[in-house]
Figure 1 (cartoon, helix red, strand yellow):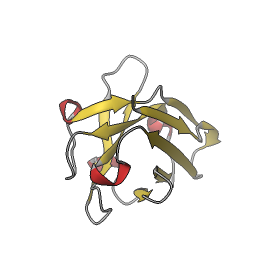
Figure 2: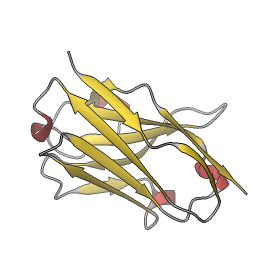
Figure 3: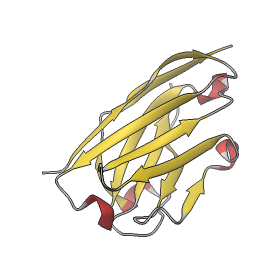
Figure 4: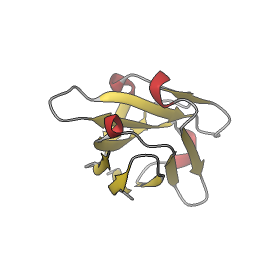
Amino acid sequence: QVQVVESGGGLVQAGTSLTLSCAASGRTFSSVAMGWFRQAPGKEREFVATISRSGMATSYKDSVTGRFTISRDNTKNTVFLQMNSLKPEDTAVYYCAVARAASVASRESQYDYWGQGTQVTVSS
């Protein structure tokens, strides 16, 4: 059974930074890509960032490119999302997910396991 647990969410002011962490267990972490998605109130869940199994390849949603950085530590089975210059429109529940394959993946259908989510609220 794969477990995915996010942490690090909170209430922050616009322009500040926050780092989310995601610990995954139950599957060979280093063999698959990982991703972050988010869901704002009243909206569909959307892709935010993904990282390949090795960490060499990443991909981002256009609106977070240059502000967010995804990284991973395969020795600790953990993936991170560093979020800088946060905006009120970044407010959402952020979900971490475990992909089925090794390469970067931006579609929900490419992911097998999901965490419960962590709330990020950015005040203006």
